[in-house]
Length: 194
Image (cartoon, rainbow, N blue to C red; front, side):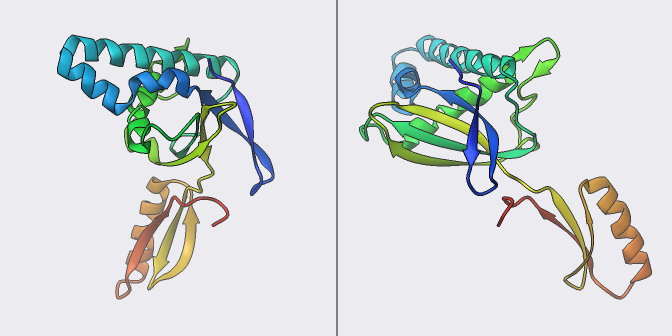
């Protein structure tokens, strides 16, 4: 099950929400296992997807219960601590499909972990792989993301906003005031501290 824990982020000197899943359960849903099931019978593969999604859903239900949440939209970090190097990283990353589906299905009352796994909410993800024979696990946490939107005139920032709608309104105002200059919007979704 999920451990709704806080992950210490040494860069920001604060704790971040994280969710933990276990490779000893996820290995049966890796890409090669799924392809093998699909070749045998599509109903076997469908059951595999349903089982994997249910596992992830249960993990994220526990995360909701533990008051673990991510601030959407965000980029996600997947830290894989695997028991060995026998399964290739691309086989493991395939399981993120089931993980995202489980995030969407995890809801308690009106509390939903993730309402949609489209690009509006998922700004990207990063996978790192390590070996930990004693405690294999997958830790998922959000990467600190700044959501600043700059208005620039001839490459010089003249204003910063947190929402696109307001930035677009001000862009039009600046463009009318400076008709002979290039007025643009730059969206900065980089990691904080970079």
